[in-house]
Length: 165
Ligand code: FES
Image (tube, rainbow, N blue to C red; front, side, top):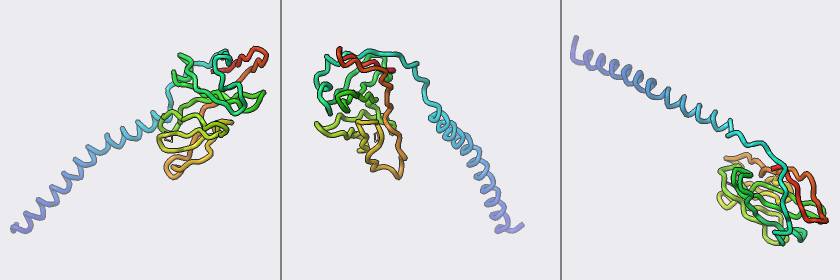
């Protein structure tokens, strides 16, 4: 065996060892990346929704059509605020403030507007239903609306809203 043959054999041997070590190290890493993605697709279970009464007399802005407020109901919406938006004299919309892209809290609309802007990546949602109006990051996130809670009854005489939340 001449020197060149020995060098070639050594090179082949090192290549095989390198490939083996690379695959051995990479497989668990790749597997854990896929597993972590799978876990993201199974969100943390939410507590069951309950009928909750909200006394709107405490929130004067909501008494005007187009008005909105953010309120925190302890233990509700994972302890995140909700938005109340007065769509019309007879209808109040109740939304989560939490953007489902990366969990930032959306801002209230400007007076007379319906745009709820997420400050993190500037997606804009509608206060009328939580749908996305403008998605500047559509190439990376196809978008999901804000969670909307079911209004069971709006007692206008007493200004009480009953919501499943
Ligand atoms: S967290 Fe709201 S757009 Fe990214």
